[in-house]
Length: 324
Ligand SMILES: *[C@@H]1O[C@H](CO)[C@@H](O)[C@H](O)[C@H]1NC(C)=O
Ligand SMILES: *[C@@H]1O[C@H](CO)[C@@H](O)[C@H](O)[C@H]1NC(C)=O
Ligand SMILES: *[C@@H]1O[C@H](CO)[C@@H](O)[C@H](O)[C@H]1NC(C)=O
Image (cartoon, rainbow, N blue to C red):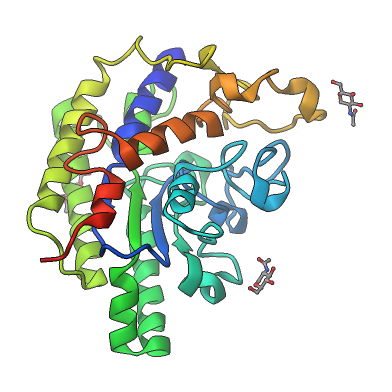
């Protein structure tokens, strides 16, 4: 378990580096894709074992007054933190929420879904989830509706100002590495074939997204991002054992919940007594998901980090990027 968790977290950091460039203007909207690292409640609308809709999930989430929202952490996700740092007043709503299209023009939409992967089959143990392919086709629907509602010129401008965040791949990798979860219907490929297939699928979806967003993309950024992702996955195995960031007491144990399927902090009758004493000192909130405290560190590196943390440029630099 400890080994999987360490790897998982390392992979999460890598996976969030995929950001489609936007214009220099502060965003009106974030469009968020991926897994439980960024899910803001989509899985609450699905029949799935992968849900975070009961206390103490959300206990530190100010926007909900400490009530669960479907986020798989105690507070803000990395996407929430990035949105707030870039001037958003409230987080992008989950796509499946009845209200989501009403809030779209202010905040964007969150398509993320816990237990989903880059591969369609990933997460089938948990039953319901929205694989990345489906998330992108939902975005295409959003885009068509926006074009119709705003007209082409305003819609193009709107999407150019938006930030796109993709946090995907951790479940694919976790399922591949985990001895306890059978690799559904397939023989396990060797690690480098697996990694090539994963990156190739991701690149394919990234291209779909860029095409469907109609951006004028600065030359060179998507290939550089994809290349970086490969390097990061490769090096994450070497990073093991050096993952306790300064300021944290506990880098491996969950603040809440056990290490049994579905690995969540559920069935907790009295949340205060079953939580760790200081949530800001734990890297992990439940067996698989980082605390808000850990998310703040990761988001900070993505926003303002040097090339070792965010490459080819960090999110703030991306924001200031002038379209040529
Ligand atoms: C739906 O949107 C309205 C208007 O933005 C808001 O007042 C209401 O709280 C939203 N409902 C939910 C469940 O988010
Ligand atoms: C996605 O990965 C699968 C292997 O799981 C592979 O057969 C398929 O060709 C890949 N698709 C793309 C577009 O890379
Ligand atoms: C939960 O536990 C705390 C102490 O750990 C106690 O003060 C509180 O009354 C308990 N709440 C419930 C609902 O049992």
